[in-house]
Length: 275
Image 1 (tube, helix red, strand yellow):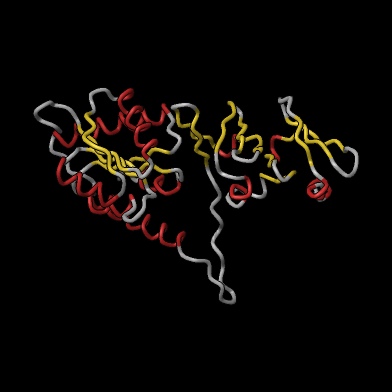
Image 2 (cartoon, rainbow, N blue to C red):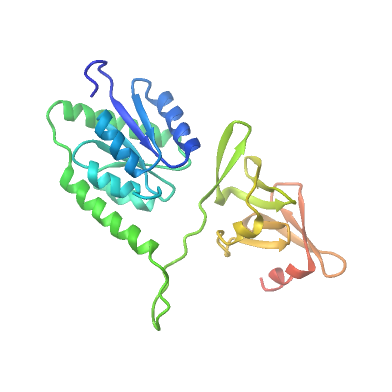
């Protein structure tokens, strides 16, 4: 605790500057008393800044270049309250259930952040009263998470009988709308439509433009949910109301609760013949 100001202190570590700023703004709204001492761009920088600033709390993104958030947490376990910030809830839920640390899932949920803030306040109060950090439980969980992360980043085995790990598909898409960064859950996307320079992302709450081409996005989307129906259109199967046949071996996709009609070209008509 910052004794001079009698305020709790924190450090944020994330390799995405817009996400760092977004977390800082949300923390300022949810916990005005919290004093943010700095923002680090990776795990190594987080450790250096921690040694200089000695914050009470460190918010660590799990995936950062170089030293990742879990590796950084292992070195900070005895010295600070750790909060993982991740797009993959499974990385931290086990640790949370054991009471060793807390976590936030991107995109940030206001209610979830409020719960985290409440728990952090309680833990800081307990620490002021002389309670020790749950270092053994935290270190055990971090070891398990590091092992899990290592398994998921190993190359696919090509040996006979080697089982390939389950693919990890895109969980959200980042899109800038004016000065705001939107984190769009992939499950909420209705369709993607590209032109020469941009891809339109249409989801349940609006639309946004991104620079990532459709061909690149298709490699990261779950093929059981998203299908390409035209060289410039990808649609979420769960968003389709019905498909009508057109002329010359084409078709049109009609969407649930929306007026847009998406074209299906001859090259992709087989997608619906197989269903």
